[in-house]
Length: 512
Image 1 (cartoon, rainbow, N blue to C red):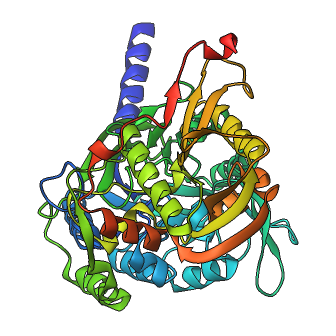
Image 2 (cartoon, one colour):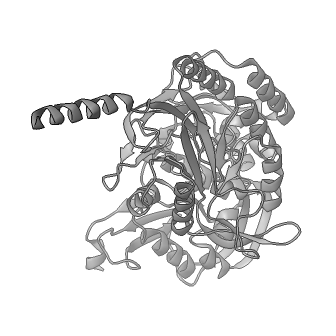
Image 3 (cartoon, one colour):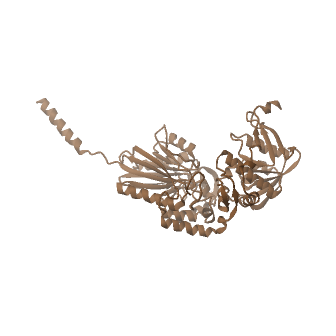
């Protein structure tokens, strides 16, 4: 009798088990871009047989993935991780409107504000947000007057993907210096950790199962957030311009971190298989899609928007300024040579004894062959002008010691100097010798020095520049100066720029 009762109970329980069906897994595809910097027009890319296809090819590839996912019953999100418009003629001259129009046409779901997206001021960000058909995110974008997010930025949003609720949080690069908002208010981008954690907690309390952080913090900060803030499934990153062929999976909690290069050359595709009840990512695959001209049929509507803005920028950007006998790549040696060319041009344009420019201001490679003004713009997209200042030899030495104290001693490129340094010496004591022309740099002598806007106002030697005298803005745009230099020195050749201006001499400081 007891055995029969146990068998009956087992049959009842098994019957109940058959009634509990496992929840169908949700297929979620996250498409992502970052650091587009306004590159919506097709352009040459070193190492590619075809041109990068620009925004029209990006749209064509997004359309193809969306169609594919719809057929399979999957869901697609399209996100951008910031720095979306500054850095190209179309982006800069339209103050971002051209890129917002393109992104509206493609159908982006959200973007996080990058550091350069604030270059036009708060009023410009407000205008762009009003034009966008998608939200601007930034959990750590705060109005100091209210202590809350300003109305043009959301901390996060929720997207319904079938039975799966996906939360998307924005994290902007920290900037503690307030920017004035029109009509009152002071906007800062605070340290992100506290704000991101608050958004995660808010979303989890609303029953959101899957959380994506859209970040413009850079890979190292993304790794730290993945370690320190629980509950984030995916981080879509930017700022470092990294072309990550595979996601980094955090050992702390399994968070997937992705980044898709820069300048609209690649589209990241992260396919997730998610349990809608727990939000657990059970499986994933990743592809970094190169947006070459023939990769996908260009979207006609987006191509029309791009062409409208290309025409609006004018024919000047197609002007040929010279030729190059080689590709000058965005690698250590290529940036060294470009930096020395620019420094030589600065000295020629001003008659200065010495010139300095920073390697971080060089934003693109210079392809071999015909060089157009658009190519020059890609190398120097920021609106820096050429300045002169009078420094003593002692002050020039201070500038050199400052840059030699960094982990990378080539942060400044220069012209008019030949420098020897000891990388093993203590910081502040690494300069071994400095020649200005044929003579040794003399502490008490005055030298006319050419610099750029960044080094005057924000760069790591700005307070040293301020110690000089007769500081003057020439008003000449740095890229126009470089165009003049290319015209005067074509064809450009790397053989003219041997690595002799900055030479490491191990142990030399101990012999002084």
